[in-house]
Image (tube, rainbow, N blue to C red; front, side, top):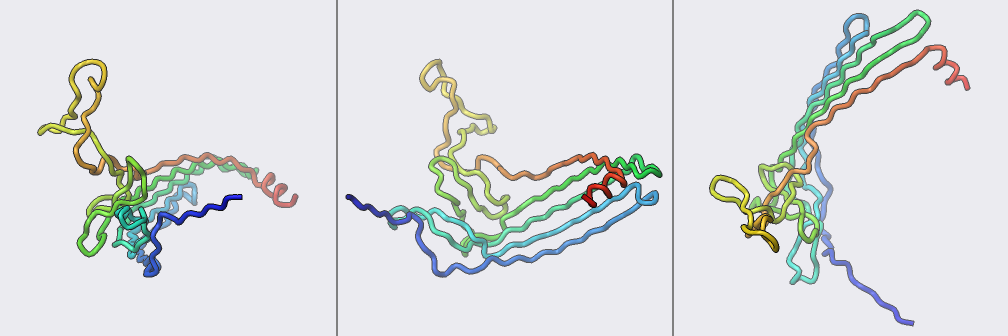
Length: 201
């Protein structure tokens, strides 16, 4: 019988501390036409400090990643909901439509003491980067090389590499995976007697 063992490639960090969070929120609930139209609005600002992230480190250390506390980010966003009651009968039947919309934008305020980029994760070709002034978790890797006018450079000719993109010489931000906004529509049909029977059973 042969036994084997291996060490984790993540370097331990005994100095980790809990993340901090500060939040400011404003909201309003509005009703019109005896409650047939309802509106709720919320605006918030969240600031997270001492973020818990996994950072790439030189493999010469014998490890590839380390969990650290790194800087702070700010999330600003708002949520809006609109509820229409189209039909409300004396028999208890109700038809509502609810519209919801939310938008949030993040920004890295600080990384380390030098505000240097922090590469997150251990992806071989594409990772995420924490960069001051940018949204949190931007995609980081080799993008297409571009000319002075910003046009992508293409290998000339046919066959082989012909017609394919020429890669840039250095890794940089190549995209934003963040979902900035979302929308939702929900239709609701209900009947007071049916709800009572369902609750009773």
